[in-house]
Image 1 (spheres, rainbow, N blue to C red):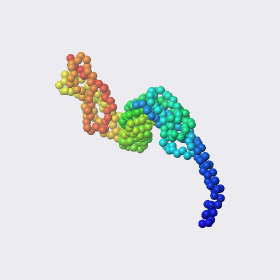
Image 2: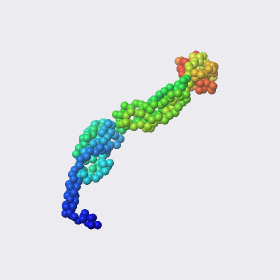
Image 3: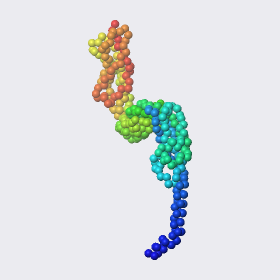
Length: 307
């Protein structure tokens, strides 16, 4: 106990003086200003309705501040704010930055500088339009098969007018069909390549029809039949020819007699000039899914009024 007493009592004046000196030194240091550089996000207020920022701009600003070393505040609450009230579309403007631009700045924090010292912005009207989707197909299907159709729905793009005007189509991410021998359906994200334009929806369902390779066939001498049977008209063209395709593995024969070509004359009035009519081609059920007609020769046939 005597040792502890001597520790606190002996040289009491010197010890108190040292303590007071340390306190004064701390107060002097604590009162000194401290300079720091903050990286603050940019926020916008009073953006006019149906308008948006059309150009690329600095998303974060370096701000140099000065405050007391004892000052305490949450940097996450600070931001650089730009007021866009009254801005006209299509006009690029510079917005100088000042102390009032720092949102939630504590009263005892002084703003010294900004880098950059201003933000250049161009606002444009917000527009939207519907565009086509162009699927990107990579790879090859199984030998003996081919892609016969690729289907994708249209999408809506929305953004600044001058950016949207330049968009004519949007691509999908690559769709791999390597080695496939049947139709595939896949949900694929879209890639427009412009962050200033938004896509709705951001992905689409793409149908890639993969079928057996096909070969060309012809059916000649298909007789044309007039309807109704008691019509007053007569044929100026008697026969048509069909060109089409069938699967490469299809080995059965096709018979022109199985195909019907008809022309309906209901509603026609007698005329000195022949009518040109498109014949209707009817295939038997056994040909459905096998024969695909690519053309009918001639496309139109003559129907005459008897003299």
